[in-house]
Image 1 (spheres, rainbow, N blue to C red):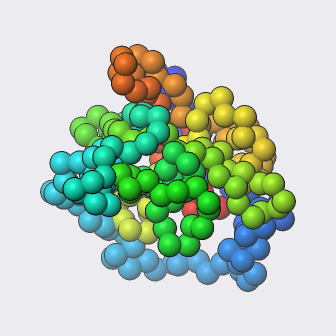
Image 2 (image 1 turned 45 degrees about the horizontal axis):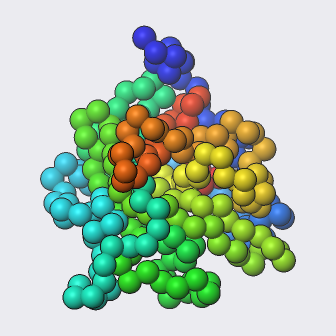
Length: 245
């Protein structure tokens, strides 16, 4: 039995998460509540149950960001940048797989720009890259995406703040209200400890749960490197999720 299977159930430690209002992360001022939270003592059926994704029809390239978008199908080629594979398992605190759950991801392109109308960073858009993907986990909880390694980008938190290269990841739970969202950073990126958002986490182990590890065993020769990012949805070894503040 593996170490993860031997771990006892541990309720979520709220001290592990940063305060909702963290001055170093300036936009948290507008996102943090100023009044006490309301406890939902009688949740509705929609809050206790959710969609069954097992029969959700996926497109042939929904999890392949190299092929799932063309600004101009007649002219746009493959996206520019370092080709990578991102894969891992969605598991619970005992190492049990979470099958048939929806995993979604979105990211900037190789230059650090999102395909979003409000992103005005000077890096150009890539006509061959949309930056979004989705897939269902298999029976053993595995998911997989092929994409381009995103670039870092500046943001106006202070005079010279930069976001490390990262990929946003969403995991859907048994109900819409239990959707979990996190980010995967890349092992060895020197911008990780400098990021004001990362600095809101006081526990280095919490940061480590958001770092994808280089997986040479599953890399493709003369094609692309692979990064492994397991998502632990609850318990002592849980991945840090940004919407559980």
